[in-house]
Length: 280
Image (cartoon, rainbow, N blue to C red; front, side, top):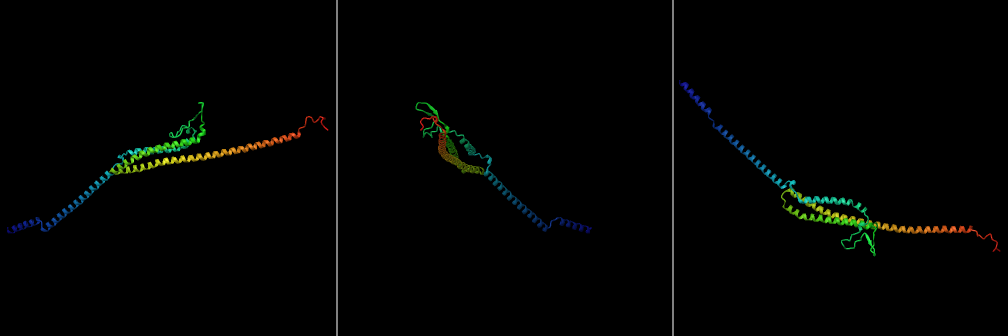
């Protein structure tokens, strides 16, 4: 009986010691738990930093997109004016191509009716005589002047159109600079800068068109002057050749007439040669 009681008490102590945690294991477990918490906090901190950085980048990208703006939504009134001006320039170039045809079609009547802004008297296509009768002028006599007059009128028209274009474009430049100064998005700034550059180029082009037209007119004038000199020289040569030809023709005619008279005189006999009186 005593032996059985001792065995049971020993078994109870063993079970108690097996069920309880040793001090060493408890220290190890606490260290593992603390390390796990530390790692978790470190990971969470790192993830939070990455999230904050992502939010900053997202906000920065949003700000950049806002500053850039949508180019399709930027509409400048000047762009329509620029397109119209480019179309006018293309039309002016087409008119320049047709210039030669217009000059070739000159009749001379272009010189009639122009009083140069009232500074001189216009030459009318008709002439009024003192008795009141009238006669029509011959336009072909004025073809050179008509060509110059038509070309000069075209140059004046182009100059007026260029002045209007330049005035419209110059009026828009201050507005563009004001808009550029207040622009906050990149799309608007880029379009405004492009519009300003294009406006300056179109102003220079309009002035260049007038200069080119004036040069074309000067070239035409010099060409007509040269051709008039050639024509005058040709007419003088024709008169000189005509005089020589007339003199040679008259000389040949005179020589031919003199030879004929001499030949006929040697063969002609007197109708009274057979008569006997009057002879010794």
